[in-house]
Image (tube, rainbow, N blue to C red):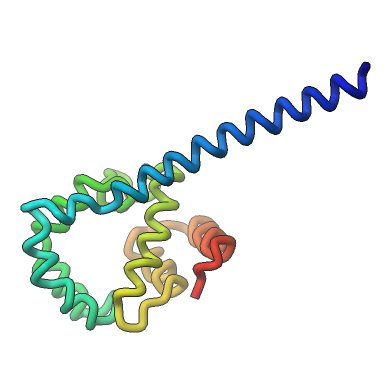
Length: 153
């Protein structure tokens, strides 16, 4: 009877873990559907329509990039206020973000890199460690997660 009880308890545990992982997947799926919907709003769309092609042709983190960000600041301020996957959304940046926010942020950086000349997630993680002030441990976790997702350039 003990062997069966152990099998039953282990299986029950595995099913609970399965259930909670599915819950995590549904949270991520919802985030995928609603990601950046604010970019279609009247507060952001005109700016992104005008500047997205210019952003595409500049290198992330350069002076030209920073200049374009300044030009669309009203749209970015609105965007950051509506989207928790951006460190700028939170008073204390990444330190206030959930793991879901951080995962969405990571894949957002990967997707954004595909739109920039010379985009590279590894470089973005490095540059953003300075921009957002996260520590070496966070940097390594982001790199490891990107590696597990097979999205590291």
